Length: 157
Image 1 (cartoon, one colour):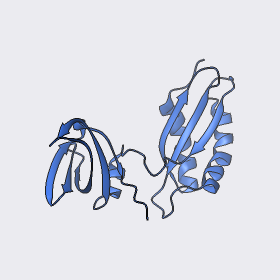
Image 2: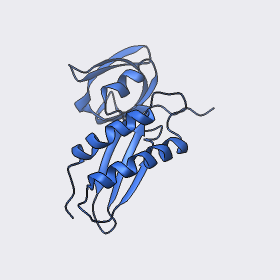
Image 3: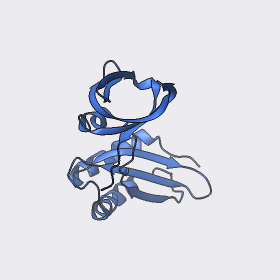
Image 4: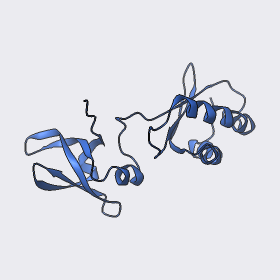
């Protein structure tokens, strides 16, 4: 199936996201027997993305996608969701939003015998592509290339 580049779909949907008051976190197109265009939304608002927000975006995006015709007339399924609380940090805004918060870190290679640990995200440098973490009173600087996944730590009451 021929599909427009995801970047073109993102560009067309960005104004819709702004209109709804959310940001495009990720846009993917999975080809196969049942092709699926998935748009993942994010927000800095307290409470995050809820079902009503997903529905508002979906309804606003439908006519834009119909006009764009990203699959050149072929059928596909369009889904909208939130990235979930355990989503990996991908963008600078993800890191900046979580400064001073507890994060879960999974490394490619062990650091002091650990490949997985929790720490506080103390600093983020987009230019240096690194983070500084505080763990057990110690500051640890890691290059992002050393990290498999970094996400907000989930704490249960």
